[in-house]
Length: 119
Image (cartoon, rainbow, N blue to C red):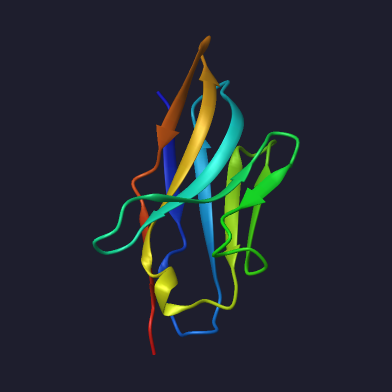
């Protein structure tokens, strides 16, 4: 059974930083693309950043230059370093992973972690 779990959310002041982590568990799994999404109050879920297995990354325009996505293939983990946070970054953040497990490739979501940016 595969589980994807996020951690690292919390409260930050404008201009501050937070680091989110994502860990996938399940014997023998392989992670292909990973991504972070977010959903703010009253908003639709939006794509924040993506990273391929070989490390190629892409970002939403709203976070370029402030957020950095990374991953560790050996540990089946990913992270999102968020700097220069703004109140509009307040949202629930979700890890998304395309995983091959027991011969089946499918997309898994974590349960989400809340990020609140406020003074």
